[in-house]
Length: 290
Image (cartoon, rainbow, N blue to C red; front, side, top):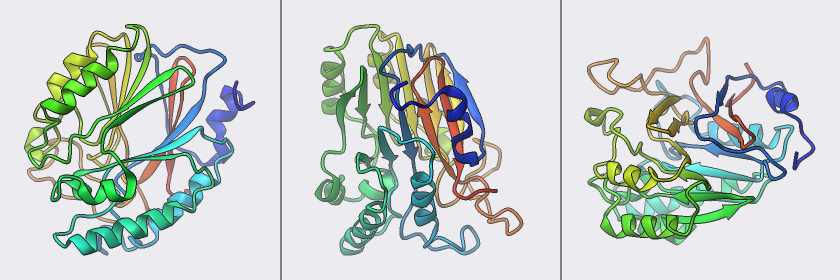
């Protein structure tokens, strides 16, 4: 293994607890270039709501400390959107982005990638996000895996858009049909529960572009909980939030955040580590030790 960490040690990971999902559905192959990355999502910096999270000003710092305490060194860290909580004030939006950037600057691992969520980008087409973090969609390669970040939030209508879809098709055209491909996005690409804005209007077009490739996995955020879904051979895995949890799709008449439980603080919040060895393993971590 690249980091000298075997599978059993990966499953321990400093004794932080959490569930393990073993998923072979993406068809990721084991080999000398297996590696780990960490996904965090939906930090909503700037959110205020004691009934939902009385530690809204401290939870992100605790997550940074928890990532820094992992017993393995991830190759990189990715934040999949809603870095900040929405605001109509452009100056306040930038202030929150500044504070967020300063806090995550405390991560020991400096290979950190960012994507916007609708709270960051839908009111200004991603302009402030770009000023702080660069393009809202992009791709990169790492140790034999092709990563693609898809922006389905800068358009307030929750569309990827024809221009970006054409870019996605051209980007993937350079890849072999058996290439290992990982997609990061904020909203689900499939129709998880459109009534709650848990969908992408033209997500089916993105999935059609991805479908010819045999080894694709999608990691996303937005719904503030774990959800695991298949579209044919493509696996989709949503991440927990770092601010408050949301109910299961359609389980309530309205999308109402889960109230803070003083008896189980930070319940439902967390982040994940992903190992690319086959079968792919997703390890869920709490913000703080239980």
